[in-house]
Length: 487
Image 1 (tube, rainbow, N blue to C red):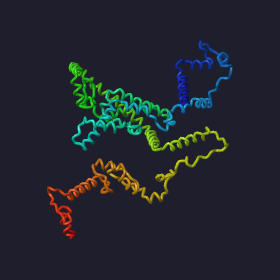
Image 2 (image 1 turned 45 degrees about the vertical axis):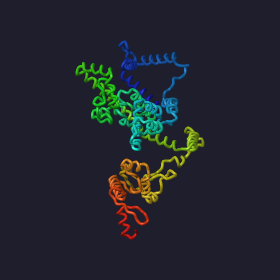
Image 3 (image 1 turned 60 degrees about the vertical axis):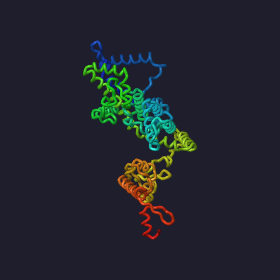
Image 4 (image 1 turned 120 degrees about the vertical axis):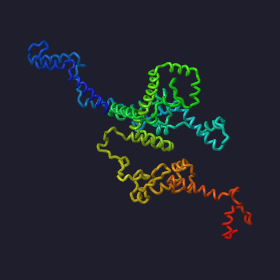
């Protein structure tokens, strides 16, 4: 299809050039057919016509290949040339599977090898590990060897699936990892180039130029309003930015160390000698660098949005592969091989139409019912029996919705609810079952703590009592048992 469109555009362009008649050849031919000679003398129409026929015959006699008939470029000819030019089997890698999924392994490796980002991830993990170990051992020091041992043991690089889910969230990357960082801009350029090329390969008739013009227009509007995430403030206003050396630092200690050097002091002296206009140019250069990086991030995010369905499909496919055994993967491979063997290139070998298998037909599911174990919608009566149309929201889970009573009760022991309780610093015990509001959970937790404190024996404030059997208890418990006649 792309070949046919390109050929149609090329022929149309040639026709426009002929009709524009910039070289005057079309006008000369029309005049010659009308009997007007180039020497302005009156001529005969038929004489001019036969002269032209003679000229055409003479041309083909001298230049025709093998003296054969000229090739006729009719619709059938273009149709055959389009099939000869078809190379879709070479356009996609095995991972991409003819455009169903994307293959960003090369760019994932580039991201991991960006030195500042790798150092930042390890530093964050080190701080979290030290904080966790500090709670258990308050006397622990940051340079303790046990901290480094724990980091080397537990630290894992970001895996491909997790990166694929979040690689468009550029605002989470600190500014100092991006500003004037050549490896980062090369990584963004590679991401943009791949996604743009992938869209061209899968949808060759899409107007890429118009899309990019729209992207640029949206970026200009958002940049003017300072609406790009992570770029609300210019870099030169950052307290950790050094204007004389045009560098951004990750912490104050590194910045002070840089400022104590001779090279920095020399640059400061040079800046002080500059005029106000020259000093303003330094800030303008910093802002232009901000704009360049922000523009690349915005363009990459836009391409990600366009390919979001394909990226989601890639993530789901990779997660499925991770959960499969070797036997299941081989079965899938055999099934795909059988499908390829069943393809007869559109030729009906039996002389009759081959009916599609029922499993390949789209599932009719107007009520959007959940799918059962067989991949088909469950019966409506079962849907109503389990109350799957009833929505239960849990504020602790971030207002996540659970459909049906069973899923709601089950979620209290799942990771999402446990994570929400851990964020609230509340133990996820049986006391908090059926509690979905954050305020209710905090109130119940305070009440449980108060009750536990009341029942706890405090030697400095409570009186210790002992019964005849030697059981030690608080005075309050002893009085309660004595009134009941149990002691």
